[in-house]
Image (cartoon, rainbow, N blue to C red; front, side):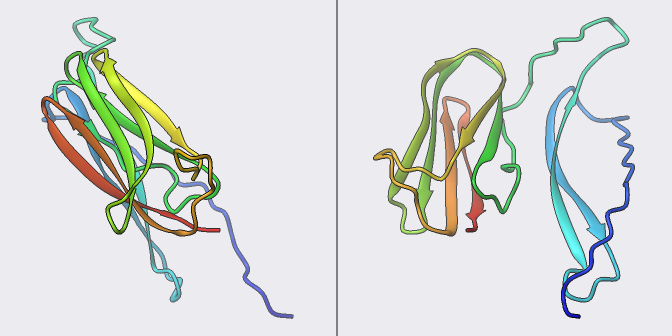
Length: 153
């Protein structure tokens, strides 16, 4: 009998925010294993450090941040999250590897805070795009941030 055997084990991750500034922090959690074909898995992480000691629970982000899409690679949809430190104009778009516009996810003025958008792999014309690498770009008055994502079918 051939095939891939998997074993799902629970993983507990504890994060210590001591010394971190308040606001949104992004990064990757690296999970290493003895699997020769896939020895490392990287999981995107977004952490919002808040000041609960003083009772401020709804702390607004202090920095512009664009998180890695989740899941990545994805099929059929993925979530793109970003943090806005101030109210302002936002432009969130998806591009193909040639730089051609594929989809406009958000454009206009948004309040400060965390924002989530879903992309289902559809173009602005309503056409399902093929598998491949795509880029998503967030433009605001605070700056531009671009990340890549992979659609697999």
